[in-house]
Each structure stands twice: as C-alpha cells, then as structure tokens.
Image (cartoon, rainbow, N blue to C red; front, side):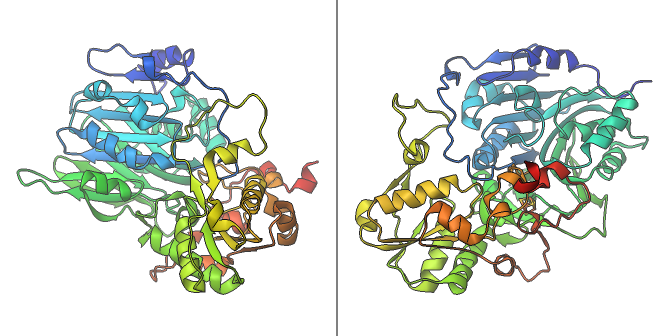
Length: 524
Ligand code: SF4
C-alpha cells in the first residue's frame, strides 16, 4: 500500500500555479476552502529592484516558535515570530490546533504583512507552531513556506524546521521508491514522509525513528491535533530553547523558540535548551522527553554568535551579547592599531565594536547610520548612482569621520564587494585612514547546515590572502579575529563544542556538496 500523503495534495497543486509575493495559502482553516488568496492591498507587487545591500552577507536561515496551552496560541506564536523576523524575511506561516482541527496559513513576506488581525482570527486553538523563513533548500515559493501541513497515515502533522538536511538525496530517493509522493521540494517534508513510512507503533516512536535517519542540521517544532513536539539534531547545530509562561489559574503554557528574545515578548521564562538529540513532547498531561540519538559530538554553529542571533538572545547556554563583546575585546588585543575612533558597521558590528573600543581605550562613535526603513525592494534612480544600494542603507556621519583615523568593525567579509563600498564611503566622508577589523576568522568554505553561503569560488577569503583582500577593499589595514580568539570568546566553560567549518573547511558531517567546495582556480 502506498503510504504517505493524501488530502492536501490538491490544495498544494492549486497553490503551485499561484506561488508568489502577496499571496496566502490556507490549509484546513475552518469555513475556508483550501486555497491560496491574494493579500489584496498588502500585495508586494511593486518590485522595482531587489534590494542588494545585504547581498554580501550570509543570509539567515529560519526561525521557529511553538506554543502549547494558551487560549490564543496563534497570536502568541505571531509575537514570537515577530521577534525572530531577523532569521528570515521571505515567508512566514502559523499552524494552530484545537484538539480536533489543524489549520495552517502561510504567505510570502514579513510576519506583520501576512498576519493581520483577520488572518489570526482564522487560527483558533490552544496550540500553535510558526515559522519564518529565508529559503536554504527548495524553491523560494509559497508552497515551500512553512509550517508544512501533511495528512499522513499517522494523521495530520504540521512541521516547521530550521536547518538543512545533508543526506537529502539518498533519503528522498528511497522514500520515492517506497511510494512517497512529495508535495514540496523542501527538505523538511522528508522528516514527515519518514514518519509516515515508519514501522514503529506509536507516533512518538515514529518521530524518533524518522529523526534518527536524517543527517544534518534540524531544530524543529511539530504539531498534531493534540500534541506539540520539539527536537534538535544530535550535533545541535541550530539553537532551540524551551520556556514557560506561568498561569495563575491553570496549567503553565509551554513555549519553544529558536532564540530566547522571542520569550521576552511572550513574557515567558527561559527554562532550558532542547538538548542535541532530544525529542520533547508536550501534551495536556505535561512535558516528556527522550533522546533519539546520543554520543554524537556537539557542533553548534559558532556563526550564530558572530552574526545571526540577536544580542539579546541566549543561545547554546551563552548570551550572544557577551560573546560579541568578547570578540571585540579579543580583536583589539590581537590586532590593535593607533586610531582616533572605533566605528561599527551597523547593526551587527555594534556589540563587537563596543568591546573593541573599551579594550583599546579608543572612543566609540556611531559614524555610520543605518536607515531602518529601507524595505526589501526600492525604486532605483533613473541614472545609475555608484554604490547606490549601500548608500541607501548606510550613511556616514561626516563630522565624526573627517580627518580621523578610523577603525571600522564588521562581522564578516563574504565576497568583499560591500566592504569595499563601505571603506570608500568612510574615506569619502573625509577619514584620514580606514582600518577594517573583522570579528571572526576569514570565511573560506560554504555552509551546508542551513546558512546560505556562496560557493567556495565566490568567497573572497577562499581564494585570496588577507593582503590581497586588503588591497581589493582599499583599506589601510585589515585583520580578522583568530579562530582560537573566536572560540575563546564564545566559551561558556561548559565544554560547548562549535562547528567552525566555514572558517576551517573541516565539516562535522560526512555529507558535503563537492562542487560547492571547489576553489576558484579549479572551477574555471
Ligand atoms: S559551517 Fe559555519 S555557518 Fe555553517 S553551521 Fe558551521 S559555523 Fe555555522
């Protein structure tokens, strides 16, 4: 018998023809037929040019939230996703359940654009999960937005996943041979298909069985009609924390989120991290947990501390603010230079720059101002303006920079193009010298664990020496934080082990895409 999916496929097929910005996909919503619908006046169709000012940054992956035991669970998830918007701005979705129904609404765009009051009212129930996404695998389309809701032989399941599976091809091919029909091209659906095809007897056993067969990075939240699950891959690549809202007149509300900054908005207390290899289940009877894998060395993503996570979050047992402050201090100790001001590249360079300035005893100045109101698209002026994208987003404070020797602090150089524009901008504002300091080691290898990185051939540090990069970006000096310095800065004294593959090329899993790790010379 063909196991796997049945209902929902037709809706998915309908949605395929209408994928795109400004549309919502409804699945299982009471009194609404499964369909995709326009966001109407909120349509994002006035796209003139994709905003490329952050194109030289690594792109965030995804954020997930789950809430169990709250009368307005979907709205709580909405708030959590709002706090996690920095982890993905391409699409967002919320699924809710009330013990009987499991409804799912997702759309392209920002959380606040998709989930108006009207839309949230269509998501009743005391349980909900949510997802905000920047796609790392699968097409960038409404169908692949999450949560993914599937009607399987094990019942209705919704899943939201942060990370990237690396043995995808093999598992998918095996499942298709066994008769699986995939609704999406997202790797997250593989987990649900594995659950549907598992021979185990209980749902929790099927989930544990499924998770033990996939390799790579996954922090996931899942929901059935009456239960919430949360799990992290055995290496603990991506963060996932558990919190609690204490209710005076009833059982506590249990929440999960990619970052603890989401708990603050929900007034939830941080309780603990979901452990690597742990599967947590929440029902009306309480919280239970089991390990589906153990004995695998931990390799949490150190770049979460460098750039992705918000400084007001605590991930992998450590405050991000503390790590970034230490990175700045260590950078000052390793590669200090005489200068008049320390200037961060906002926003992500700010905390490290504060640490650097304090350690070096050089004044910290906000010499670059970021325009926070720049959307994802803009109308380009008719005449091409040099470095327009960067100018749109950043502007120098001329009176702070003129005649000064400036230390610029940033968190990464990927292709080098944006760094060059920023150095030129600071020099153009009258700086006498520009010294660029980077709060992590050179990025020399792509990530396969849920972070969108260019191929090795496009990473400037993979193919050039530090001196060659300095010349390219036109800085007076350039220095990176050492790998030892980075690990020391993120050390919590608890033996936490980090993945550093994008700085070393040493991948913690066997599965990598060989084509992606060819250097520039070998690719031509
Ligand atoms: S390769 Fe880099 S970005 Fe990817 S998980 Fe490892 S440390 Fe993080």
